[in-house]
Amino acid sequence: MHLYAVTLQKSSGITAAVYGSFSAARQHELVVARGKVLELMRPDDNGKIQSVHATEVFGVIRSMVTCRLTGGNRDYIAIGSDSGKIVILEYSGDKQCFERVHAETYGKTGVRRIVPGQYIAADPRGRALMIGAVEKQKLVYILNRDSAARLTISSPLEAHKSNTLCFDLIGVDVGFDNPIFAAIEVDTEEVENDPDTKEVLYEKVLVFYELDLGLNHVVRRWSDAVDPTANKLIPVPGGNDGPGGVIVCSENFLVYKSPSQPERRCAMPRRKDLPNEHGLLITAAVVIGRPTSSSSSCRQSVATSTR
Image (cartoon, rainbow, N blue to C red; front, side, top):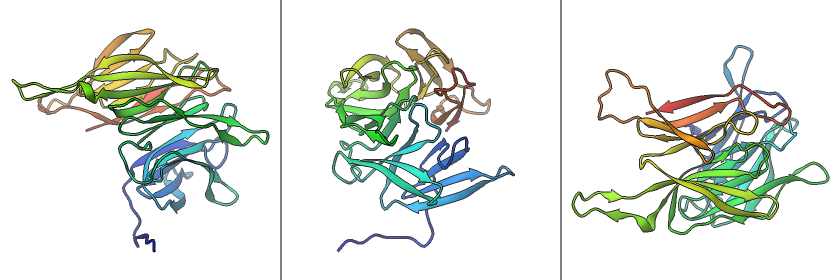
């Protein structure tokens, strides 16, 4: 016998949110995850957010990202959960519900540290997805179309590295070059304890993974050390829209890093009444405006949330 608990009052805390055009082209919509509930929201004419559709997923949504195929006008939703599958959904305006496009199994069910699902990232041009675990495992899926113009995904390409902890994972904007994904990692084999200060010594590294579309394999293209307090990555527009690379968010400061550009550092603004010993960390960020295949330029800005 299998039992599933459904509460009378649904969850209200939002654990993940993505923006896109899900029900129709040029719609401004949000999809939020409330633990085990997936909800589509849309602003009305007065600017108030209205709930369009909400559904139970009978699982735990751990991560979520939008992806749009090149030349498309609607967004898909890729979800990492405790199901041991990568699930791609689209919203059907006719049926008023989320429809499953793909569900590929790659591991065991449950929230496990070596089973991917904690992190998921998409190439900004909609060509690939990377889904990662807290430890060791990362998988890359290539997105494409079939003869009926429906979305298809390839078999998984492995980018595993043993004894490695992942802290964040994003897709890097490189235009139409080979897709690149960036991750903050720590090699646990190199962690040491200082006998004098009793401190744990380790090195965090920013790693770029490149998907070679011609050879169908993933390689570690570039890596560089970052501050031990680094916790989040923000993509910088690339291709014809900017220099590319990423912004590494650390305690009290930001660092711009790119294999082809010099490093730049910027301190976070602080309130005058905030004690110096109180550190600032960015916990959430979004890039407003993104390049599309039909437009070579767009206005970009970054909104962040700190603690």
